[in-house]
Image (cartoon, rainbow, N blue to C red; front, top):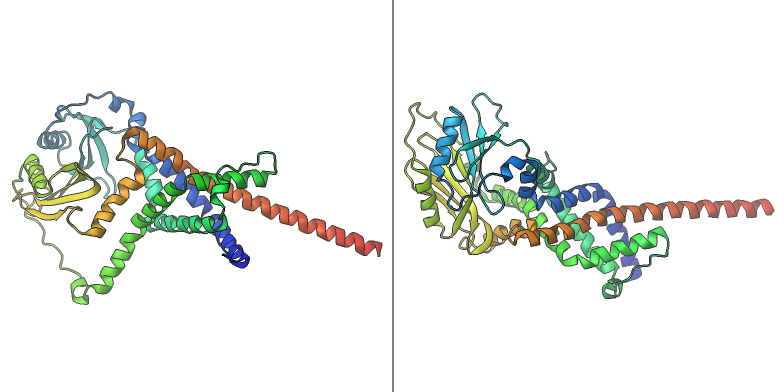
Length: 380
């Protein structure tokens, strides 16, 4: 049985954790609920793309790359996104010659022919994802910390409100503002408890796990291996013949059976050290971190990551993103994630309002007590 003193301390921790993180928690949770529709939002913001034909047999990657190089001569094609269940088109991120290092153009292409349609007008969905994952410019560990704070709020809330079953249907509409908001706050937290734990745990993992992994590698890696590597020699000016992108994709699928690439990244294309990276899902598995890096000139795989065979923690890591964003169950699951994802945003608002109302009530009580004390003193 938890003592009243412990409950008071947990209530204080619960209250201040919510107040300190309330604004950021609202931004992250609200943007996260909306960002499940990232691809749909991008199509809505670019209505001309939604009208493009969807091809049952998309154009080859080689055709797409050729069209891009013809349309943007001298530009660097960095990434090609393949059509999926929502987007009917190819997309590519292109860095044009003379453009700043951090400036890329997102280009849309027809899926049936690979013909370049033109630059994408709006990337609203991507901006929402950047807001949710990085708060636009912050490191991802900040959002990971918010996930950990959400777990603290959940744990303390469960202990504080021990009569969970009794509070599932408790809503006293005729009472004061604070009582009504408190009942709504508890009901929303209890009804969405399982989802909240899932979102908080996966968000904390994706934000904080890389930080701990880097720290562990730093501690365990010998100093000699962390010394600065000599600069790579400049590549020869003469271009080096590249393997066919479609052939490289077939090699990647042989290395990781069931790989369904979502992105193809091209690095140092046209040079002797060029690489093509194929990242995507697995046709028979929920994990979404399968990746194969291939030497583009020789066609020999350099790095293969199959979460099914890379160990337990790698498999767990591969499950985090689909579980967090709900992008594996179609439109119905996205709507479920949207509605449930709105409840943490509501909890951050309602918790703040309850705290502010309680603070004002304490101030009014203190003023009333002082007034009463003053009246007694005057009467005496």
